[in-house]
Image 1 (cartoon, rainbow, N blue to C red):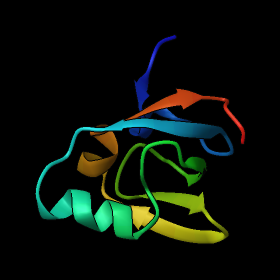
Image 2 (image 1 turned 90 degrees about the vertical axis):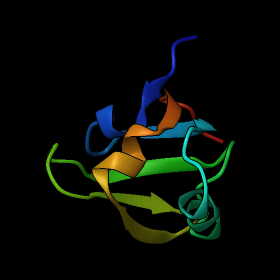
Image 3 (image 1 turned 30 degrees about the horizontal axis):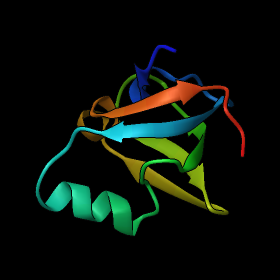
Amino acid sequence: MEYIPLSAISEGETCRIIRIQSQGPSTKRLYEMGLHTGAEVKVKKNDHKGPQILGIHGANIAIGRNLADGIQVRKGEKA
């Protein structure tokens, strides 16, 4: 199955994180916010400019487009 960057997921769609290709402090911060391999994420806002708003574990978080580009997901997966 094909994996795509989180930044390519449209508003309202759900996906599952497959791989995080970030390194250093940003990876640690993503894990602290609940973004880890296997996590289910719903994209709340993605206007393809500026930060993306995500719903995860009952909370809304914002991440920058560069970070979202480095997160590989599988589209349409639910727990």
